[in-house]
Image 1: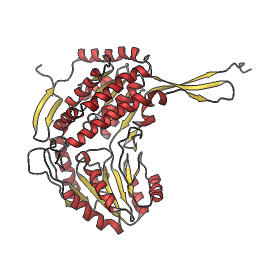
Image 2: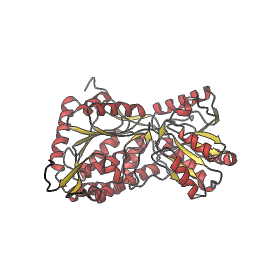
Image 3: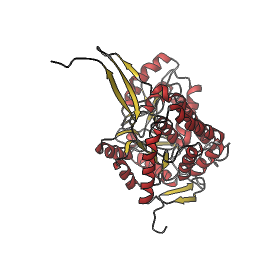
Image 4: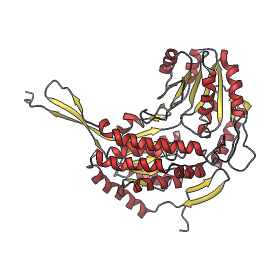
Length: 465
């Protein structure tokens, strides 16, 4: 219809070509969708875990069976290399299966032991949950809210990112194909302004967001004003701490993967490489050589080792960040420019000599840019790792696991990894502190976010005199 804003546009970052645009829903469509979600909740909340699991497990099975088709949509829409895209689809399938299997156990009544009588805590769903999700993991972000919150008995309405509308529609269709009733999981093509309206809507009982710090502050404030529970998974600037006894044969491949997976567009990516001085020269020489070996190509080609950024806007922003960092005194060890070819490609880059007054010292770089810091010892590494506004994840590399555990305990983050950065397990809670947000997704903790924890006590007692 003429005059409607095309907020949702599917553009292939490999070649810059617009694939398809989608209009925002109007007021009538909005009301129909919210009403359906509320109506569905009144029935879904009374379904047994086994009945809910039939649908969620079927969605998991379909996702696994159609992994290649789902992956290709993702690759064409936000540029993720096809092998990584398939991996994301498979992980999303495992998340759905995990909650279908474990939700009843996670939410089982918990017996308490009062001094008189008996008591227990029981869990019950709270209603329609509003999810706001980003483009960098178009299915995983959806699976990690759909799996737990639908199995808990809630229903979901979701605003996905504007550059992945086809992924948003594909995931909604997945649930419908699995037998989900109308209103169980609803995609909303809405504007940021309309998002505020959703948060304000009395039918919405909780809000979960994965995105930028700015978006988190805005949505969390809105939820707080409405006294609605929320969870926020925001940015990160994870430290990759290399101690003097690290095994570089193990460490370097993880350093490359940690920075370059998803072309560096990952909240919990390795972003700040903090290396003890005695091993720093060997580390940076091998790290730089490994990054130099990456070659840009078609993300649909299995042989491609460097894909595009998700959009031209993302590339322009990252190039500006690097330029500002250099202007403020940082040194560019390698890269720093866009690659001279079609599409939104950037050279793998390393910035060094980053001082505390440089914006790069505090900012998150969402792309193939590594920040390298040389420190004198373990204590200095920990201090620098903690000198961050973010606190999502981090890793430490050492041949001494006991030492690694001591360091991990001292770093102020929601997640720490020793000699790996593998967060891709549905059993492991995901989330951070400080500007990285609050709340946890996945694991037992992930399903506890939007349920009412009700105390029930039984006791025959005389009233106090």
